[in-house]
Image 1 (cartoon, rainbow, N blue to C red):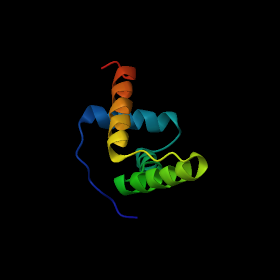
Image 2: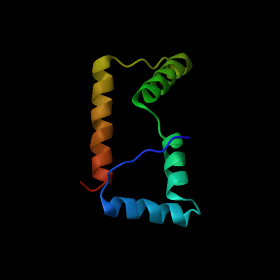
Image 3: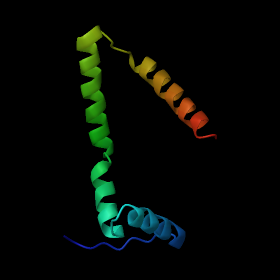
Image 4: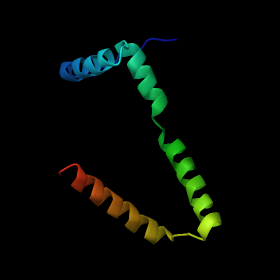
Length: 85
């Protein structure tokens, strides 16, 4: 395992360390677990494509590119609203 130096604000490091400690983990272990739990943009695109194919097979759902953009915009709007922004 290699080490990496990452520059982040002290407040962010302290917050992450507190979260890690609350879960009984070192900051290093917490960050490794966090990295394992997140998807890369390519992985997200692959998962979305598999979901699109499954929906199309299941119920014929096959949105156009324009419909997908509209749905993405609506989801973004709702997420912003839920976040109180």
